[in-house]
Length: 114
Image (cartoon, rainbow, N blue to C red; front, top):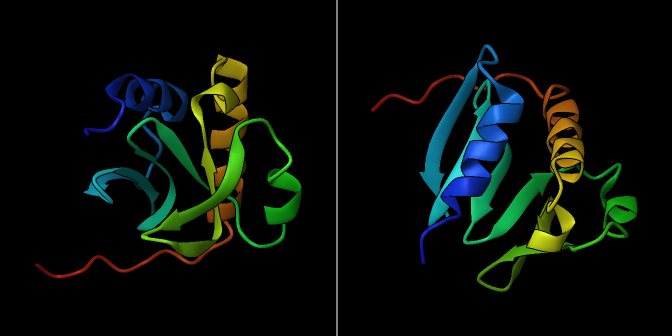
């Protein structure tokens, strides 16, 4: 099943044209990257939020939030958000801003050679 293109467009509307912003297809969906670090993404209809370890536990209490896992393996610092957790523009903006806040604390990654 493809990823939710409408959700991708909503995220693009929030992030605009940030310097260092890229998109990359992965996990059967799409990832949004800032300076080479993934900050959020979409897998089917789920919003993937990279919140980091410091705010991980408190973030799990938000509507629709659960620990993200791929093939049964938990992903550290990643939250999966069901559609009810990002239904409104305010909810989605809150998630995107939180993920950007975390990823801005990380060093930029050097581009990989292809």
